[in-house]
Length: 168
Image (cartoon, rainbow, N blue to C red):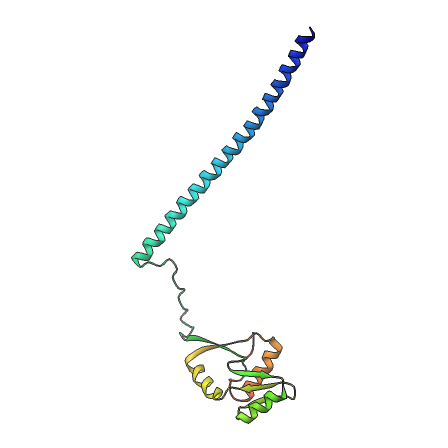
């Protein structure tokens, strides 16, 4: 009887081990099925993307653009835009007395206070007169708004910019 109970215990242990292996295989099977589902979804996405690429290529070959420019409203003048950098292109903002003296020695127009000077490029007034007639001019700068306003006021007082030019 003792041998039968040992045999029964051993069989129960083997059955439990087999059940554990079966459960592990079920988990693996579910993971594989989930992976197959994911792969199928990605495959369909790739097919759709390839179809879109093919359509874009066909349109490009046919000369059709999907990216049409927005029409310009009739009340806006059709001028080209010219973007100019304030500091370094139109003028130079200096804080040293040496730079101030050098600019004066070169005959460059210098505006400003005892702390900051705006050194104008030679021919700036004439240049801006011409480009303001031909282009929609945007003056770009990395300076703060307060400092930009001071420089724009200096350029305005020198006759380089029309009155009322503001940063923003």
